[in-house]
Image (tube, rainbow, N blue to C red; front, side):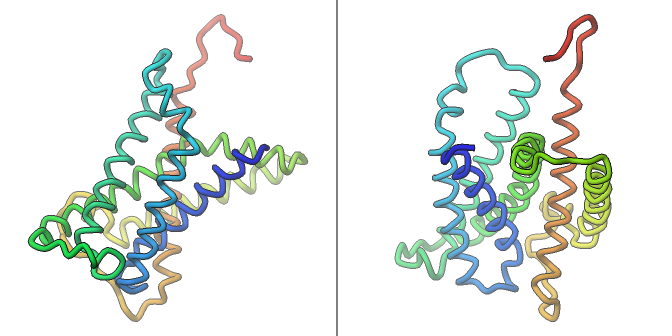
Length: 227
């Protein structure tokens, strides 16, 4: 694993953590939320710089089902991130308060919340379609494996996905995705770590879906051997 690959993994991990800590907006405080959001913007820019080769090849080559899914998710994530960032800047009372943007708060709040929740789901799916590649890298670092460890990891993944589905319903995330409510409910007596763990589990559901959707697109043609 070279330095660039390590940098990509580090940026992706930091983006995932930032995404999780951005969700409990009221529980962590407005100023902290804005600073994490600003950090997310910088990480997003760095992510695209590190992956500029992939972006430069968008108009080249054949589009397989895998490539179509990967490109579609990347475009949708880009839209959500830009929507979140632009609306966040408009709503900012701390980091970008010096811009003094007024009169757009109401539509910006709706856009910010909608893009945040759709971005959460889409980024989790995006992470899922790359999960196999990340596991491949992990196997290079930890080459020794066993059937017991494999089954333990599989069962852990299923358990996380099952609890994540429960957390998805418990936190009423579908209502936020469908824009049925305009404000997120927060229990201020709840420790923020419980909120983040539930959202981490909900993220696991979409990672699970993305991973098996990606695997499902891999269809072996009769009479052909895979290398």
